[in-house]
Image (cartoon, rainbow, N blue to C red):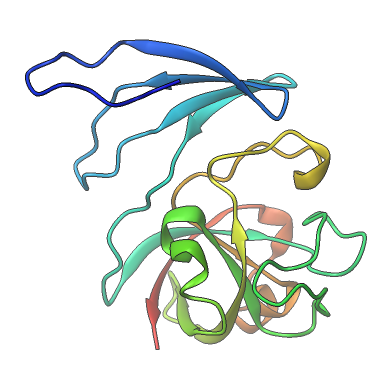
Length: 176
């Protein structure tokens, strides 16, 4: 399926396609940061946008911190995409949404994550929190990440003094 358009041609409202047994509908949309949804994912009772981009990275990028188990058999399912390894959750590590991951160019980079109370910590980028695909075995049945996720290990949550049972916490982050 081609998604190219001619100059002056109106984009379609949606086009359906099947990818990894997930129904994706390519939709148009807009966002104040220029990052538009690249589609929607409807599977296993989940319905939400997919993204190939994320908001611009600044010195204080708004994000949502989620918790990931980077160990073998953990909820991240596969090994980390940066190094093909599993990681101990006592290490300060994160996965970033697809757009922020930038096709792996942020692998091994350190980021600073700051909680709303000003507590901060540094963590190493080891994986992508896939914002394009999900709901399959490769993603442990989980839906795609939104485009503003910093998916941190238990150690990140502990270093920030946060209760991981909260599930999602607003934070800011920046490249160190």
